[in-house]
Amino acid sequence: MSERAKDIIKGILISNIFALVCVGVTYYIINVIKGIEGFLVLSEFVLLPMIVGIINSYFWRRHKISAGPSFGYGFLNLIVVVAVSFFFMGEGVICIVIVSPLIYLFIMAGILCGKFMFNSNKHTLNISILAALSSMFLVNMITAAPSNDLVADRIVINASPQTVWQHVVSFPPIEDEPKFWLFQLGLPSPLQSTAEGSYLGAERKCIFSNGIVFDEKIVEYEPNLKLTFDITKQPDDPEILGHLNLIRGQFLLQDNGDGTTTLIGNSWYDLKIKPSFYFDLWTQSIISNVHIRVMNHIKELSENT
Image 1: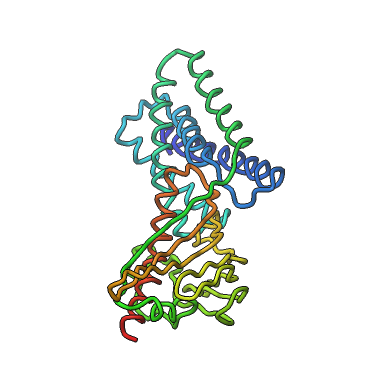
Image 2: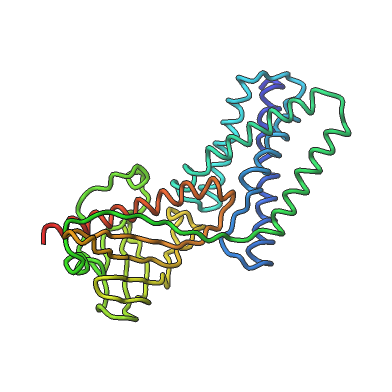
């Protein structure tokens, strides 16, 4: 094996060992000391991949690797990260699909930053950059906190609120194949809702594919107007991102005065994964597609009643 190949492998292995140690420390501080279960901080998807890329560049520095091969070696590093996440950290396939572009982007940013750092003799600058990244990593761990948000969707149904209401509290199984691409890849999709009764305080279940079930409790019940339910138990399944808590769901019915009804679906969630600006795009898209699949089913049932 050539010296170049040895250094490539050494850089990938040592950088990933370093990353595993940092993830372990982060987990201990956030999950054990702070008691925030399942939380993943911005550092793990931004700062840590950058440091991994810089470590790669340190071991590759004497081989003058050009930009083209760097992208290939960075992708090889990403494959190692994905394998470790899947086999040792229990992350699901969908979760990996979502985080991979972000991790790869910042691994490459670190590699390119490292090329500049180690191709110069500015040792003070190099130390300052590493110290700044390490400090940001530590601060981010200490100040980590979940964020809450709301997803809302609406559709118009050619039926009265009284007719639509019959299919809101519970509804029979959805037989149509899901169209959303993440559902097709294996992300659980909604199939059916059941309820022990139509009244305040009734237990309700939202059943997804793959045997996934959300336990719910009706906390607001206004016939033909509003149904609100709290999620009392969420399944521990990596394909539901594992770091997302669904808190509350709601259906609102608005009489349009022309024989149609606007059905509004709201979901409140607690996102325990950063950076929010990136993962909120995925989370809101997933929740919105859950809404639309259920609401289209209610629409079909109502219009065919």
